[in-house]
Image (tube, rainbow, N blue to C red):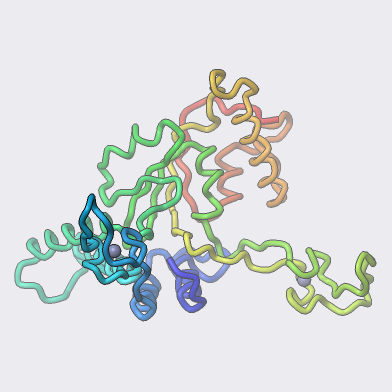
Length: 309
Ligand SMILES: [Zn+2]
Ligand SMILES: [Zn+2]
């Protein structure tokens, strides 16, 4: 992950650039351009094992650090991240039958790619750690189905270099959606005028219509939400559980479902949609989730949908 502005612009292109343009996600070109940029940026970081000291004391002797071979620095992982994107895109093309590139033995090439995919994912480089999720490259992994049921972690599937499918509880999705989800149409209040859209005359004075527009948002009052470097083009979310059960041993006040309800109401207010589960509101949970996170296909559990007020 990197905060390089060019890399972030290329990452945004992976998600699509217009409000409801999700077609970009099916295109590998933005992903490969992002990978090229990571290759340009890649470098080294201080070795986390020896903290750059190149060797350390073991008993009475001094041993060379095995992690960095006594160099004191290790690759920053961006090159591995870039290679992982290319490897997974090629696997996808080959499996879809669309690969026209020359390889004497396509089956052997696919095996080699699969092996490299595993090596890269297990290489000790922070990019493969997606906060709150255990990830895999195998859709038939044990992580799906049972692994995400405890609510502490979700499961994520890497496809074409990114996490495209996750499985978790609804509360877990809610807690991590901001670092995973990004959408070109999502806006946040302007940081200069705070949504007033007008240039401030004096601190604390209410702007008037004749006042000039705010210089940052140009009178919009909102700005595009920045794309977090951790964003993934998640297209499918399977929710294992809508509202977490009250854990009376650890949480005697039932705080977890209460927080969940408050969080959902906040998001619905932000989007100007009714909150599901409130008496009198006709909106369903799937309708609300689709409105809050456009472009994501949610798979809901069969359950009685509860009230959250
Ligand atoms: Zn070292
Ligand atoms: Zn503004």
